[in-house]
Amino acid sequence: MQSFEKYQRLFLRNISNRLADWHLKTSVQEKDIYKLLHTIKGTGASIELHRLSSEAESALDQLNPESERWWSGEEWAELFQPILLHVEFDEEADTVIPEREEPSDPIADQPTILILEDDMEFLQHFRETMESYGYNILMATTEERALKLFYDERPNLIVIDYYLEGKNGLEVVREIEAQANSNLTPIMVISADRSSQLMRKVYETTALDFFPKPLDYELLNIVIKNRLLHVNSLKKQITTDKLTKAYNRSYLYELLDNKKQSFKRTKEPFCLAILDLDNFKQVNDTYGHIVGDKVLRKLADVLQEQTRPEDVVVRYGGEEFILVMPQIGQKAAKRRIEDVLQHFKRVAHTTEGQTFHLSFTAGVAEMEEGIKKMEDLIVQADTALYKGKHNGKGIVVNFKQGLELTPAPSLSKHVHISVVDDDETIRQMLEERLSKLNFYQSATKVSTYGEGEHFLEEPQSEAYKHVVLLDGMLPGKDGLDVLAEFREFDQDSIVIMLTARQKGEDIIRALDLGADDYMTKPFSMDELIARINRIVERHKGGKEYEANTGRR
Image (cartoon, rainbow, N blue to C red; front, side, top):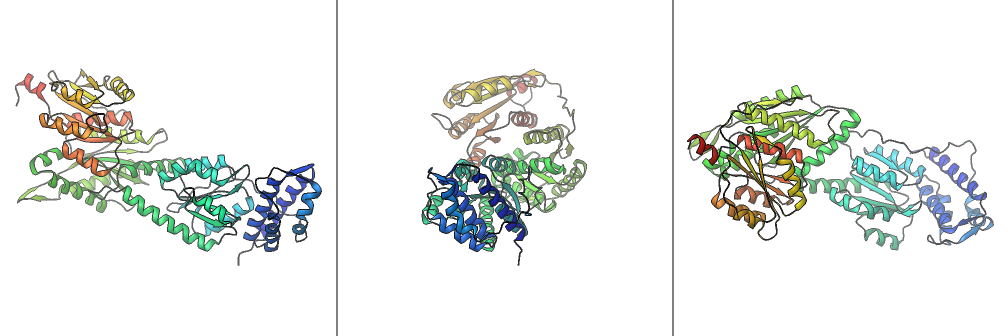
């Protein structure tokens, strides 16, 4: 049997201090009296002060929680007299425990619960009990603290008390419900008020559960496990690439955000690698997209089988995969990926009696103190990958500061980038940044279009390489319709879809219609530029170069 003596002494000391403060005032508002009695009822029952809790519950029947009526000292003292008869306040009791300034470091793989509750005794009891069930507990006694922990620590589940100093818990629920729903974070509301009216109010919000005080911790533990299993199942469906069964980009950004927070606390190393299939476009052109899909599935299988259980495989887009590798330095990560590469090179891909072998190129970057945004880590890995493609493919390259690419000399080569997007701000931003790029020692030409029809009316680009950044949602012709019509007369240009579409089938359709790659909005400009650099480097030359060199 758990001893509650420490919590009882602390609780009674705080009640004594609160009543002593009231004695110094000429009057107290009824809603403040209600809150204190509500706390006594809920916390008292939770720490086995049952008679005290029962007397508080009886006194609550005489009060209105919204009333601003002022009670004189004699009036509220008479109301509290039955409660004080059951209490002998210990002058040597512990003092109030202050709220911790920082949460303790979470234990890996344990769910994290954030609780907002302004009763410190209840908080301490909740924390110790739930930690015994294997949860990490983040405690907040104010709304401001709770919101900071919610956005910074991204807990798996949130518990909010209904009665808080200055506002009720449902107001806090409404403030965070949009983000909580987006993150699939369940919210529970607790209260010593068991009324059906309050329960209806709770379930009219997005909170999933209501638990009355005193809490049945065994039942609470079972319900929390149930909720988290359901959330994990939903996340698996939402964050899994349908073709390869690897994770998708949605999961990647959530994972990297968690890794960033963990790195800030522990400084534990981790690496990120980008892998890109070599000559994959040639596979699709020669054997068809069905065979290409089989190759992608096989690479995903090899990555899952040949990496560690803690490594995470993500399909990043097209023929690109990202590998997130915790607790490993850059050199060791490179060696492991080289082992995977050698294994994949030995895989025989067979179709209609023909057998072929493939390789991939990879770039590896390690998380460091100076990296502020996870997009920068991706860009570093992308830069190393680009170096690998430039140096002959089928290799693994570690990123290091100062890594540069030496462009090969060329004859009259230049790159033309067409931006097709109905958002004027996006067009201006892209035009300004992309026009500063240099390929093949030549300036880049940038054209912008607000509608797909205007883009389609333009003469076909005669540039050595033409890159089209095509928004998926356009006025008039939809981006996918523009892509389909464009590919009827231009098979050489590089098309990158810029899309807010999250449906996997839309992205698959874009790739089937001839898109070379896609990026989801909002996107990182640095990441987009790195992507353009790499895709331009690996893409075959176009008309202008052929015309100037006589090659066909």
